[in-house]
Image (cartoon, rainbow, N blue to C red; front, side, top):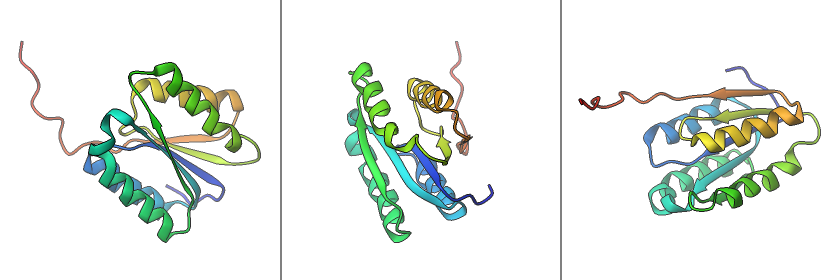
Length: 138
């Protein structure tokens, strides 16, 4: 990844190590001006430690980190939350990195739809797991 200023990182928190290490890598390699970190309230306790870690990394680097909760039980409310929280950042010249590693597909669709409609430069990253576990046999 190359360095770019005026970059906003958009991510959804997870309890997985790859969320944590992936966030560390992006923040180390990129010149991010802000992080928009979403999490699903149903996994609040499970993601708490990784969210705290990312906030601490951002604080150390003096990067504002905005944290917003979403809910699987309220998809329209979650969609509106994403739209509302993106609005202030879709003006001006910015680059966007979307970390789809632990992002549910509905959130991916909403995020890319908003960014595409705004005509802004976007790239995405995916941090693959070390393995995908055993495949289920029929």
